[in-house]
Image (spheres, rainbow, N blue to C red):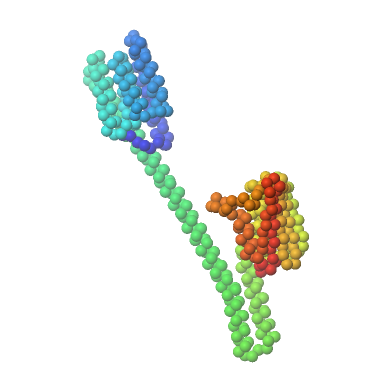
Length: 383
């Protein structure tokens, strides 16, 4: 009745602890009675001590060989001192725990017959000498069966918990996918109701004006009014995709909040330098630059070990220059590992985001000399 399942359940561990307590109690009773009977000779004492010490070894290194030696020591001891016969109950529990079903039952039968054979000659009641070890063997089998049921139920609960976690993760994935589909549908509706309708209106106006021979001034005025109206709607759609930091503040104010949060959370000295007119930048540029600064500051926080970081925003008539400079430990840009699932894609993401707007990114750094991330973004890169 063996099992390969570790006793993870608290009740199973309690049963194992009870087995140790039972062995110690029965050994103590046998030793005390042997002492009281005056039957403590050298071999008896040696075998009793050896049995106890060998059992203690099994607390950490139990196995079939260990059990075989334990049973042999007990047989030798009980032949000299029958008062140790009642240890058979503890030995039966151990056999049922360590051995496969067939050998376990065979060991229980052999140990029980050994106990009966040494108790019978000196028993005042021969029936008790037979029933005692026999009932003990039956109880040991029942306890072992219950112990294995507890382990099996514990393993089943663990399996069910693992399945539940897997189902929850799958459900979360489905919900995320559903959310993405809902967002795509919302954007499709917004684009249809704004840009598509606007282009349709402009096209219809142009056709109608040409058909009725309207003057250029009248036709262009109608087209301009419709285009302006739909431009406002288009900007509302774009605004719905704008980062939360930009909803209530222009880019410099949003960057300043990022720096203040970084300073409060890490103790770094942070500075923001702004030159030029921030209103020159379209929303798409503000979004790209904000993401760039967020990524650069995240790298400073995680890797740079810096004491100061400075962000510079320089607005020129046709481009926005961005610099994020720290005085940290620096690194070798040529030795930067390729992006993997574990990370390393921050700089690549920055370059791709800027490239979509026609911008460029450069990184200057050396070990021990800090890092400077510089970007240039055309102000015509977004509308």
